[in-house]
Image (cartoon, rainbow, N blue to C red; front, side, top):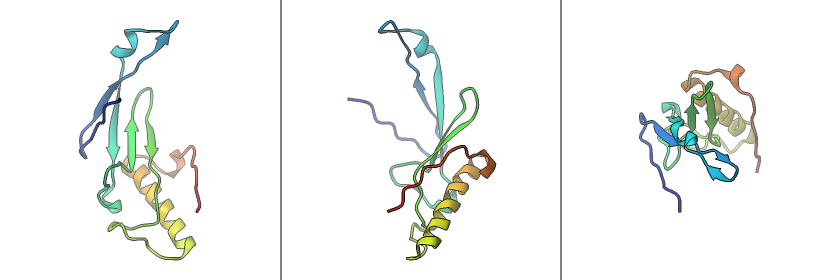
Length: 115
């Protein structure tokens, strides 16, 4: 069973990177570590049990943005209207990217799920 990690707003998590060579774990992988910084803009309200984004800087900056919905800072859906919810969800994605120091020009890929 794996370990569970909980991060506070300003806490970094360091995890070892493990490599496999000829089906044997090498010690080299344990010497390299990645730092993960949670990104949680105030405009999205406090997350409960997740982070809106995770930033890592190994060989460059890479941001993973959690699924966003069309809600405001108080975590209330902004409207029953699909277009308004979609607009807000995209604005929330941009908010996470901006909080991490990026801009819309830095978004390389997005996956959208519409239900």
